[in-house]
Length: 220
Image (cartoon, rainbow, N blue to C red; front, side, top):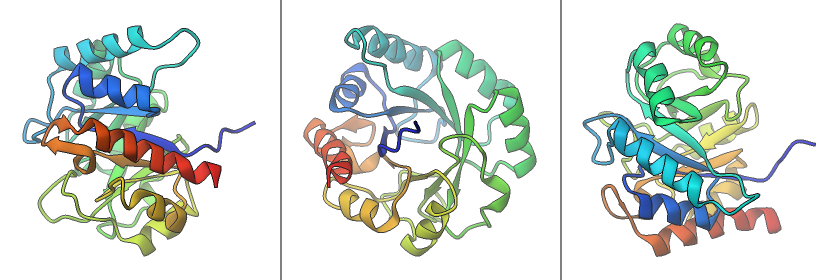
């Protein structure tokens, strides 16, 4: 039977303490950003160390969150090598990657990839995959590739969520995530800046509150 429980991705992890807090709170996915211009960027050795620590810390019988590398306009060779070296599960392509490049990545990574788009920036049809998630939708900021704190267009997001397994991002916080989920009905939600004490450092109380609020939708 398909697991329809809403998924939570905590992105922009830069240290073990934050990632462990997210895993213990019930996050389903942890994101690591390999984009040097991001204030949440990490290098491959750091990500590898965090991933290893989290997997070792998980209680027996409890699966670790899926580990996601976030890439902006990186080559397929770089993406493949980084996933292998850091022991990551998935790649999130968050730049200006073309549909052709996405299809190449989907084949090369055996389906372990999905595209992030800015809501309203391009038509989504050519970017929706059969993977789960099938697509991430973020706010349409003219200069940033995510982490802007702006909300994604709810009308567009709702339309996309009815068509595929959508991972919703953009301006989500512990205070608004439950409302956004009920309005849009995504497959999952993604947060970075909305649970931070400062760029690259999580506020653990906000992080726990976010996961709790998101998961509350499943219990009514």
